[in-house]
Image (tube, rainbow, N blue to C red; front, side):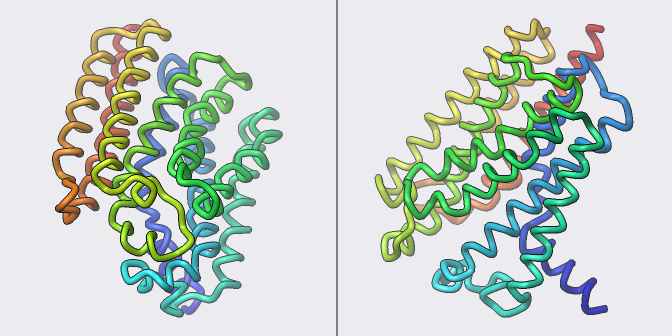
Amino acid sequence: MALLRSIRTTLEMIKWEHSVLTLPFGLTGAVLAARGIPNLHTSVWIIVALVAARSAAMSFNRLADASIDAANPRTKIRALPAGKLSRSFVAWFVVTTSAVFIFASHELNTLAFDLSPLALGIVFLYSFSKRFTRWSHLVLGIAMGMAPAAAWIAVRGSLDPRILILTAAVVFWGAGFDILYACQDYEHDCSVNVYSVPKAFGIRSALLIARTFHMVTVLLLVWMTIAFGLGKLAIAGVVFVALLLIYEHSLVKHDDLSRVNAAFFTMNGLVSMAFLFFIAGDLLLNR
């Protein structure tokens, strides 16, 4: 069926499986708020909301960047520039996933629902930020960092300033790995009106900035464990994350970017999933 093929192509285009990057950090916010595992109703709607928000953001990004992707040898094979999908279909997908996100927020609580349009506005902003600032990576980090704070709100119906420490950690984590990913497009970005840290400072310096961001991430995670009074298993989780990030950066050299994709998806997927398991385990063992 044509509709199903288009939906499948859209999911491939937005790399739906990459939801694993942000979702575990969002769920970490939820387990911290619940001091354990939230009830089934809340957990299901948090997952639906986070996946829908990312799907809306990524499809909107592909729509906004269609002309940029068409001019880039690395991205011209994506579904929109390659003509596998129409702009109208992708626009429909953005509207549908945005509606699912808003509905999921409504099913959680009043504050989550009231803030849902603002959350969508922030995640959509990233698609335009690379047109006017080299620090668009931080805008992406902010869009990702909202996940744990949003999940906290979903569970509690209010916001605790402590969860903003985890939000800040995710901001620098996401910005750091996005800088690594952007190094692949250094030559192309230098020839067009697209801003990025690699374009502004060169690949060698960009890698140093990414490492610095990830050092800040680890320090913020340590602060978070202290702020929430977590135990030894949570501290072990921070150490494990630090080791994963060290290994991630060992995969990418200024003169060898061949393993960027492994660093981007595999290692960061492990980072977010491992941290969730360590934090959840710590909370469950110390109830």
